[in-house]
Image 1 (cartoon, rainbow, N blue to C red):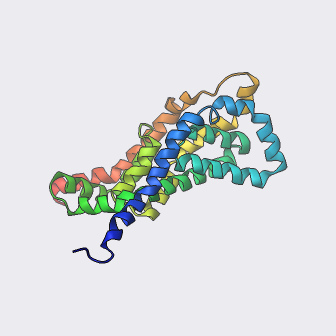
Image 2: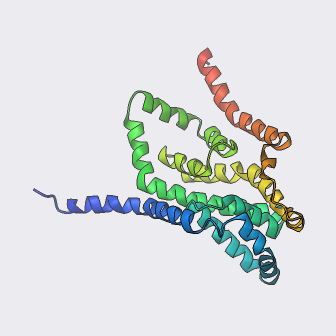
Image 3: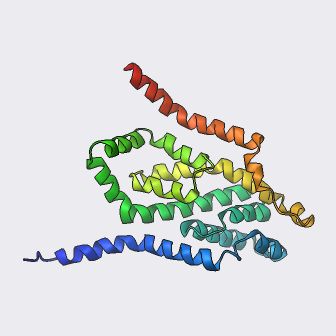
Length: 245
């Protein structure tokens, strides 16, 4: 016997996956068809057109730039690094870094919400109700959410897409995710925005920007220091637990 209304459950569940399916579809299509348009060469070829448009329509150029950046992040399209460089090139270190970080955070929030709506809440509930290793992992993340959220944003080896999805799958609140994302991406955003702000001279010399600057000691060591600060509460909590404090 079919309970009235129960036949709608699978359809309702299927709808939850539509945002992630749309994101995955657009990401694949973007990787195939947009890679050449979201590249350093494209920026170099169209730089004067972009500068002229910015000078004539500053507010509109800011809005269009941020909308494009949000879409690139939300749909995991290629070109996020180029977008950050473009923000620095068009708007300088400041307010360029503010535009870059804000747009990136909004885009990350959209993919976070899509993942959370489609799978995150149910997966988090299952992890909470489980026992053994899975439950211990979930508890460990819950006890150190702020530290772990900042850490995955600060560590250069963690892909941005992964850092957007993982918090949604373990039940991180949206407000905490937004705060940690915005402030956590500022260091890297500032570095890339500053490189973008110097692109005018790079273009004049016919060169390409040196993105390896991110791994130079003057940049990397302070970043690792921030990672250590993010881990400090976790370490202190672990030491207190061993001592029974």
